[in-house]
Length: 160
Image (cartoon, rainbow, N blue to C red; front, side, top):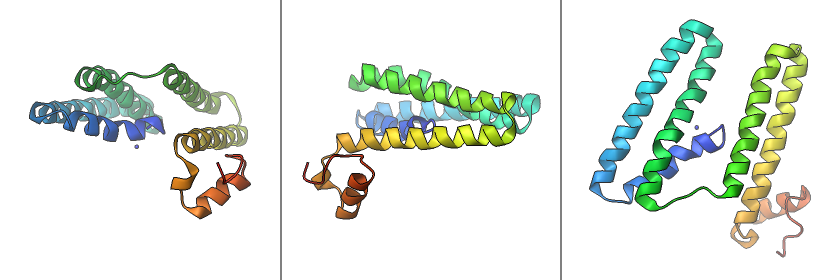
């Protein structure tokens, strides 16, 4: 499922934060998911009629924007969670790359658009892997992963 990277992960993190806060929070979680589903279906219907197949992507993106705007204040209220400056910067970086890839299909010839999109996916994947590797100690990763990360210079050495 998050941005999409971030959007795919968001619902499971929200579930963990909300479900850990008692019985009333489970009802809150259910209500947020029902509201998100209703917005998703409504946007799919509206955007699908207006934009065809592209409308499905627009609706998907819009439903996750709605989900984030709805759930973030709830999770912050229940658990005290706050996004760091680095989280905001990363979010803006990925949102702008999504916007560029989306818009390039209306500006560039298809082959160029596919090329730029592929480069964006590779760069965002490398960025994400480098950040994730820095969050986890290498000794907690399987040996084959350690060698792979060292080979591709995601980390300096396996003895970190």
